[in-house]
Length: 266
Image 1 (tube, helix red, strand yellow):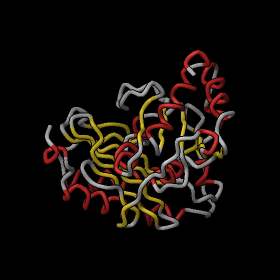
Image 2 (tube, rainbow, N blue to C red; image 1 turned 90 degrees about the vertical axis):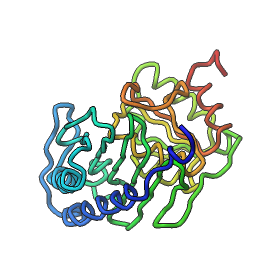
Image 3 (spheres, rainbow, N blue to C red; image 1 turned 120 degrees about the horizontal axis):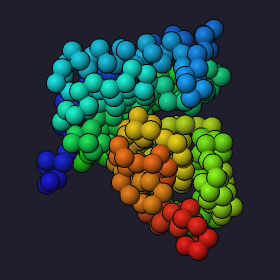
Image 4 (cartoon, helix red, strand yellow; image 1 turned 90 degrees about the horizontal axis):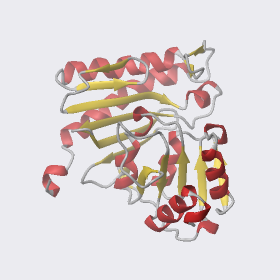
């Protein structure tokens, strides 16, 4: 595919802004307000804000592009074999949302032929919106952003949502990496990837992620000059195992992947 064909159409970028704009008021109306919290079968929390925000987005997609597919965290999939498929996570970071911390975000992605070509990280409380699109530079509220160079693990800032997401050998791998970097922080969900794209974090390492968790992140990170793959360095997709690493510098990505692979690989 040539560069022109790979470029995300401006029409879809404008529509993604519209979708984020529609979900924002719904989420803000419930933020830091009394709200019931339900538990899904996997014991993760969900609220009416998650459901109402996704419903608002889905309604607009179906009206504007009835031939497009939709995959959402709260309401599942429809037309998943379509050429264009929207992937939605209405509140990525519900635990942060229900505890009053504005480090969650609405994730909106568009897949073309199974590949993410458009991604949105929208923080409706702070008014920050990152847009990444194939063939274009990532922007934050319309201004280009980029990752920062960092080749030395000892100087790197590492973000992970929680150390509890790692199990078994993954725990050992994550702890090895934590022991080599300069700073480790937690509890930012998709916001950690957003600040990486803006040049304030060098690495984000996650596990147990689903398509709706990472699809929107791929264009945002890549459009800012970073790398985002699975722990083996392979491109992310529907068959990925849920382990994700993002880095602002290709040298940092390579070094971190080696450490995650095991002591013998270092």
